[in-house]
Length: 110
Length: 115
Image 1 (cartoon, chains in turn red, purple):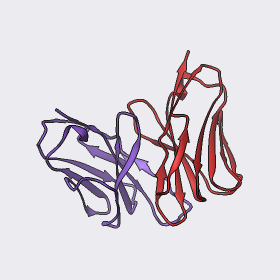
Image 2 (spheres, helix red, strand yellow):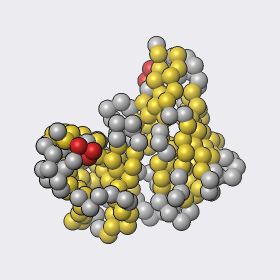
Image 3 (cartoon, chains in turn purple, green):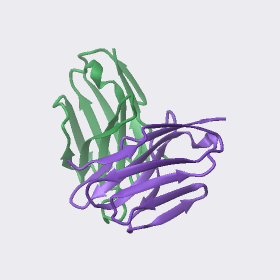
């Protein structure tokens, strides 16, 4: 079936270090969304990428959509303790529904 | 105002019981979902309704039966609860009017514990 693979599953960083999570699909995506789930909370929408090669920034967060629209990344510069949580990508396949990746859980050591 | 609400927030019950979870959204969306999140944080879609019509029904035991009385509500009834049903269940909604907007809005979740 159509799947979105997300890596890594876990990432532990020291506060101030950078963090990146990656999503990959074997087939072209129509768009991809990113969500953040704080511990004990629910997924909250961060951003949607639609265009090939698109790059969007939100403060210390940089989101990229690959040229072939098969992969995407979320990069956090200089992590803070408020960045802890699980980050999910969700890719929409052209003929079907959006599919969530397995998530990357980020822990930040002060 | 709460956009997507779920009740109850916590549900502790015995194996074999039947229970229901309710979801309501006041965003005017036409599509609603049920997700199951296990202890590993994986988000697995279970069902999706569009305008009260079931459009996604993943491989879920038939003990789980969704019901959408109207576009703003999606309930989930679970029969004969099993230990493996313990998880957090999230309801979500979105507007399907344009394929360029796939944003889903999630409810706060219902933590189900089966003893």
